[in-house]
Image 1: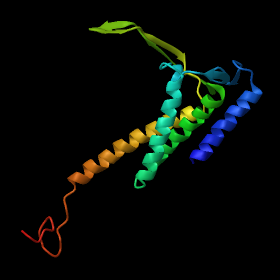
Image 2: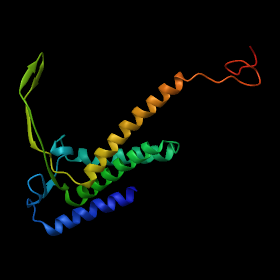
Image 3: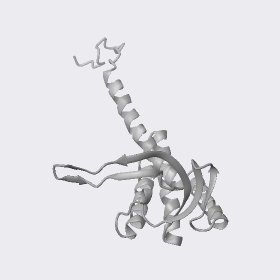
Length: 186
């Protein structure tokens, strides 16, 4: 699955590079959905976290961590494996762009409800406000990472709920001992 995700990500980016000029935007579904070709040298959602090397190192470390966990813990639940595979494929897809172009190719451009958070000060916290009228432009790899993280969160949450429910289930009587816990020493 990881390989197919990387191939799909890279093929769509290649198609965009060959079909669009950098900065060009084409409406697909009115203003709600457009294809807009940009290079994103920053991180997720265009947020800059410092030196560009941070993104290379983070992608490599995350990829190694995921591969290590997939091989070290083959007993992971299927949802956890899917989530890790999506994050791994997305991380590698964007790392390929960074290695070859120095930035990530983004092209999926969607309308989003407006977010307008006002400036406020609370004790020692000074928030400068935030406004967003369109969702940040993204790609297939970004989508895979986002969906993968959501799947992992749900997997952890549901596994916790299953353990919580299993902990409340009374143990059946052992037919040989007649004791509720099956311990013949009592």
